Amino acid sequence: MLTFGDRLKQRRQQLQLTQTELAQKLNVSRSAVSNWEVGRNYPDLEVLISLSQLLETSVDWLLNDTKPPVINDQPTAAPPLQRKKTRKSIIFLLIGGLLIVLYLLVHNISTIKQTISPIETSVTLIRASERNQWVPTRWNGSPHPKSTPLNPQRLLINAAGNSGTIQVQVSDATGKFHTPAFVLPPGRTRQLKLTGRKTHYRIRIKAKPGQYVLNLR
Figure 1 (cartoon, rainbow, N blue to C red):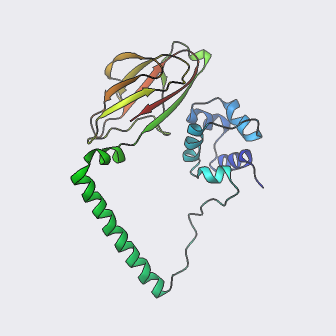
Figure 2 (cartoon, rainbow, N blue to C red):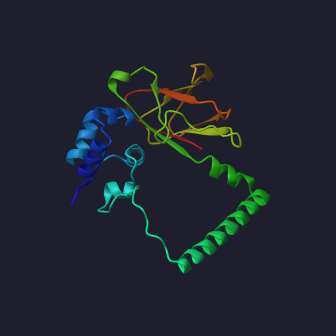
Figure 3 (cartoon, rainbow, N blue to C red):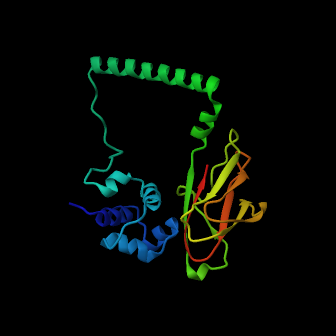
C-alpha cells in the first residue's frame, strides 16, 4: 500500500516536477517537500489543498488507498432504458436548480455573492532571509486573488493565530499600487475594493519570520 509520501513523489515525477519546483509553487522550502515524501511530517490542511490542485489530483487520493481518476477511460454505453432515466434525472435537476436560482435572486442576493465570491485562503511562509522584504502571497494556488464585479468589496483577515502583525501592499499586474501600504495585526480585518473583471491584483506582505494565514471573504 502506498503511503502519502509515495503518492506525492510518484505524482510529482509523473508531472516532471523537481522538489525545488514544487516547493516554489507552494511557497515552502525544498526540505519541507523532501520531509513529506520520506514521511517525517505532513503538510497542513491549506497546503494540502494547494498541493492536490498543483498535482491535478484529489486530497482523498493523496491520503487514502483509492485509485486516482482516469481521464482517458472510455465509459461503456448505457442501455436505452438507463439513458432515458438519466435524461429525466438531468431534466429534474436542471428544473430544480433553476427554481433555486430564481428563489435566491428574489429573496437573498447576498447568498449569490457569497457563492460567486467564495472565501480564499493564502498560507505564506516568511523565512529569516526574507525579513523586512515584501513577500508575494498565493491564493488557493494562484498568485492573484479573484476580483468579482458583483462583490468588489473583499474583507482581508489576518488570522488570530498568526506569528504577528503584517504590513500589506496591494498592486495591480503593472505594479501600480492599488492602495497605500497598511498594517494589519493578528485577528484584525481590512476592507479591500478589488474592482475590474480583467484586473489581476497582487497582495504582498512584510513581517517577521513565521507562517501567516490570510483569508479573503
